[in-house]
Image (cartoon, rainbow, N blue to C red; front, top):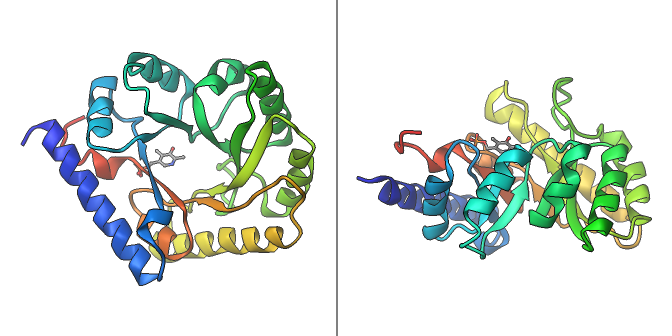
Length: 235
Ligand SMILES: *Cc1c(COP(=O)(O)O)cnc(C)c1O
């Protein structure tokens, strides 16, 4: 089987599992968006993902996002998601490409995003990254700092918060992952109760290849899936 067929099959299998997880939790599969994480593969292989019908693509390094977006400019229907840590000095160059920035992880970055978005003449959709695993090596706001960050975001005119993003602990398996995802959903529900004007928390970006079904069962609206799509493709 060639790479195109393999990727098409992998995407179909993932979409089926997304639908099954949605059904188990009495949700609609159409409310869950698959973000194909293409950081492992080159632009040509990324194009196969697009041809297989997956238009939301995620990259963790801004430099890779720029390079791929430029190379794939002939496919203008792609929506680019920056899912990894964003350095402030790369914002000006990155913002014009983005559909959604998933990883606002500090107040300094939040302010810088507003400035870069103003320069790009945009109102940029963003998610606040929350460190739900408590792992010191992970980025993200501590859960108790998110409310203050949302207050600050509400005063910034060139971005709009649409939700929260989190990563489960890499150790502890699905049980730990489920606890982390529940914590993010509960934090969202609690923050929604007195959310500042202009801030929305509808989106929950959580779940990767190893834990996306659990994430969907616990309320994910976006799952960021990489390795499962490239199984057997030889990258
Ligand atoms: C790499 C990455 C993913 C995808 O991980 P897989 O396990 O390959 O599906 C999701 N989210 C972030 C932030 C990542 O860096």
